[in-house]
Image (tube, rainbow, N blue to C red; front, side, top):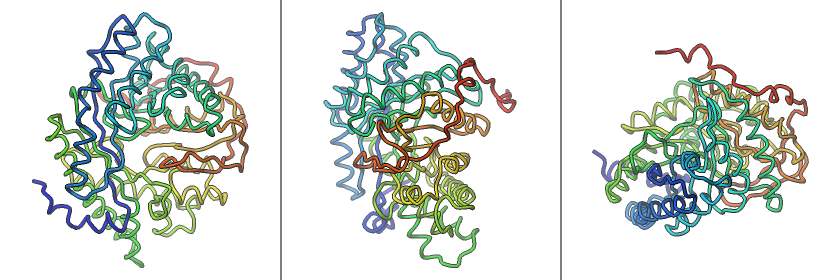
Length: 452
């Protein structure tokens, strides 16, 4: 049983340590919106979202005021749109993105995710049409987000899809070149994507989910750092225990919001995702947690070990606090969105190679990293393949959200504003994987996939 007394201790966290509910995300199934007519299907998409999510924003605002817990974003995630694209008789399916944007505007949400496809084992005609439309769809809409799952431990890696995504990212960077290629911040390429992730740009409503569901994403890097700052001299077993206990308290707040929102909206209660999702604000950084544990700078030797301990302790605390912890639940390391990561990258202490090693032990992957705008598409595809295989071999979710900033070179800065932050353009290896990506086909699933 959860009531307001469960979060009394959280008030200090809210007022002094940047604790917030990062997002309340409503998942909506669009499987009943399929039609051979693109126009009719788009109308169905708009009507369903406008109906199901009509009460989301006012309800969340009411809950925020009632409990005094800041809720930063109100979002919607929908069934992967490639499912609808398979049914329509049109080649250009970008009007679906326009319909999503209109629906988002109508209900007043911050972002809408699900303009994507699940192609880990192969691509349907609808998948191919959807992927081809991504650059135009994302460039011409304000808050529509896209994700494509190119691999899984069960299926292996679809290298044909990886090659297409490298080209799509380059095209999107060009189409949004006047805004530091910001459009790429709304596109993520996954391996082992989860169906109940409330965070953007990767949120979509899985085909195994209920008709409509509420998922909550909680964040609190500042709370964890503040707790550790009071434990000078503690050994690492004690440090892990402090993180676990802090994660428990944070997750209880998320569970309260999830339960209340789902009851008032009359929809299914989904998961609480306890991900330490940082912001560019001082005191709200995962990198600074690692430095509080004992690193002189994030990126130094020992960084991966500290991050692994942090991620594990966060998950253990969250599982004890909620009967339905899901999503990604761990520590995010997006460079442009984390003040400490930005500082480490600017100082040269944090490289893409080190970030890749860190992604083997955390959520989610190479995230919000700016690279030179002239980086070839096949190099981006190679990076996607590397990250995907880390996830596939280790049975975890990994992803790439990378920005080839048009016209920018190593050492230049990009600025996206708001939660997306700013970052230096980082060096990426200039060696070419063109022949590797050009072979196409599928890297088979690893032996550990044979679990039946």
